[in-house]
Image 1: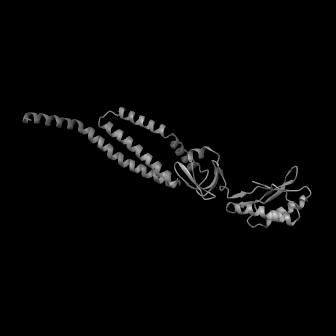
Image 2 (image 1 turned 90 degrees about the vertical axis):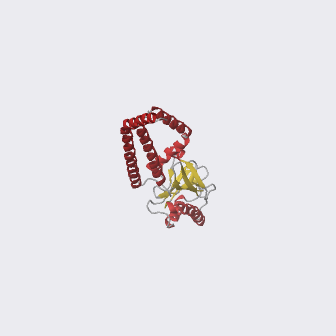
Image 3 (image 1 turned 120 degrees about the horizontal axis):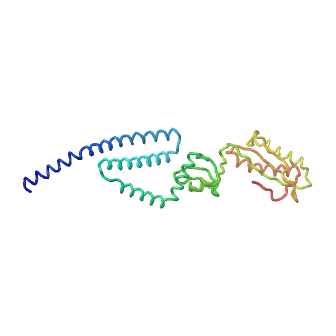
Length: 268
């Protein structure tokens, strides 16, 4: 390359740099200011979610989504300030987002369900619930699934999408629970005495709450028996013990009183 050609190329390069330098400086300013602003916004959003007592997993996930969304927006702004056309780039991003969304429909549904559960709190960790045919204690509310432990020590993972769209029975939310039992006695029995015996059993059990008061009343006159509804209240932690002790103690008390218990005693 001759000195004249080198000088020509150098002058052309310098001219391009001079013409392009305002755009480059502007783009770099936008880039650095944008990165600093994104860091502040992300930190503030995390603090707000922590103060709202959102699930730590959800907090991190939402903060990461916000972080990368802002970074992509900043990158598009950066290349736009450099003078590079962004139409094609935005179109490609849109197509990629649509493809990912279609391929992850189930996961997105579970994610949305997890957010609804965490925001509206139909249950929390430690609650015993019945949902999707499972009765178990909630161990962990994750982004896509809820982890629960059944009474026979089996771990169950229920998708949040199905969980949030189905019926949920929360046995722990109110703190107290009523056992609904039915005892059937023969028509030859003295029903007033039977009622007194059953109610006495409930009143003698220290685990049965006094308020609300336990109830015993004639529920039904069936073809072969008089059916009594026996309804003790208990704290959630004592429910299982109250249920089984009431069955056992009522049977013993009725036998001692000479009252015949009909077969097929029902419990609910």
